[in-house]
Amino acid sequence: MNMSQHSEKLRESLLKAAAMGDESTQQVAARLVEAIEPAIQLQGLAMASELAEEVNRLSSSIHVDVIMTPEGAALRVVSVELPEPEPDIWADEPESDETVRITLRIPKGLKQQVDGFAQAAGKSLNSWIVSAMRMGAAHEGKRGRTNYASTTNFASTLRGWVK
Image (cartoon, one colour):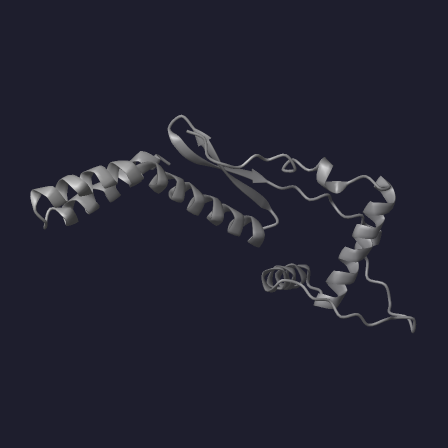
């Protein structure tokens, strides 16, 4: 995405609005537009980054980053491959008398996402969560106490603006 295109369109709009004033007003507006152009581009990048974060929050199958290229900003979309669950982990076990009830508070967006996963798997939400917990517990047992963040591709992503 060429950030210059967008700031140029905004520049034109502001100068067009300033054209309603006298020549002095137009000159001041032209200097102001010149001065705020880097801030406009930075805000455009910030908006793109926020949109990418929103997509990341809503999706578990892709990860989106905004990266800077010589031409401007670009989106990098990476497919996130989740490990295949072991069949015995996802198998439903008959409930025994030894169950416990817990209260779990989660963000609304995550709840909606998990509801969708459970529905797609043809399971109740409770059943899906229990299966996911079994898979997580089995995964933890296999890898010991290694920090998961250090094994992901996105742990060292650098974000910011450089001119």
